[in-house]
Amino acid sequence: MKRKLLLILMLSLSIYAFALKVCPSDAPQMNLSYQSLNAEKLSEFTTQRNKNGKDIRENWQGIALLPWLQSLGISEWHSLKCVSYDGYEVELQRVELDNMPAFLALYHENEAIPEQDLRIIFPQTRENLWLRGVSQIVLQAYQPQPHPRYIYPWEDTKDVFGWNNGELSISELMSKAFAQSKGSLIMVDRELHPLALEYPALLADKALVESNSGSIRLKGITRVGDSPLAEIVYLQCGPFAYVKKGCLSQLTELGMALGWDWTDIRLTSLKNTNKKIQDRQKAIKLGKETYLELR
Image (cartoon, rainbow, N blue to C red; front, side, top):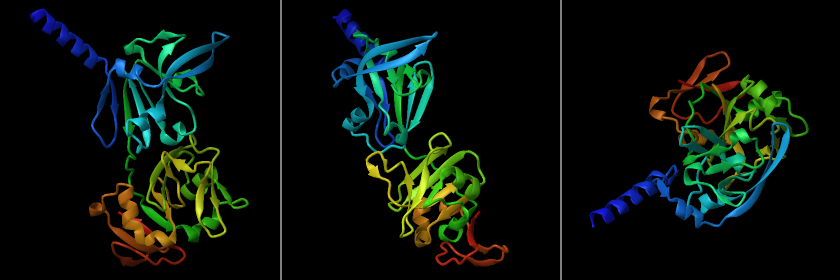
């Protein structure tokens, strides 16, 4: 009897030790056993790489990552971090994964991959982005960034940024609007969805597009996960930000979507001469060459 209990205990510990941990941003951690992973629908995929001057083609079977996460009820997340047993990490933005296949590999050349050696594979990327021995998949919500020091009305400043046939490249925007050659571009759309993307890694070939009505959208990225990316009303990088005039009355809500702590922020409306013209929680009407300062 004691021996049977000991075997059950050892089996339970073994399953727990090698369970794949899936950590949603807004729900308890899930511990998924090797057996339950093998019961999922598997997809076949191939990879090609060059090693020591030789082209290598390999065949795999695994779980398509995004549909699987969706089936687990995990849909609202901003970035995904995979962690291996030895502490190595790979992190990708949601918008990257929306545009490329990703798999949790369980079989390699028809051979089962041991549970401690399961792999995250992105067939369209270099091998150094793959992860071997995955132990955790962490789904991360939008991470609040420091609030800007200065906020400018978009309509009063946009014409100096170098538009070309209704398009403004993100490289021009970063240079002329933010005086930055790299950094995290923070955006909020009209539905108050926050989005932070790295330039140049994810935005080097992207642009803002302005319609005849004056609405601006991000060309090349129309969805973030399950949510359509609506008209952009707020842009920030570093200490500078721009907001559509029609959304100035929503500045408190915009800040809350971005994770600002309004109890520690003093909002002042200033002219370019640095003359203070009002001091209040919200500034609704701003004329040309007027901006907001947040301290």
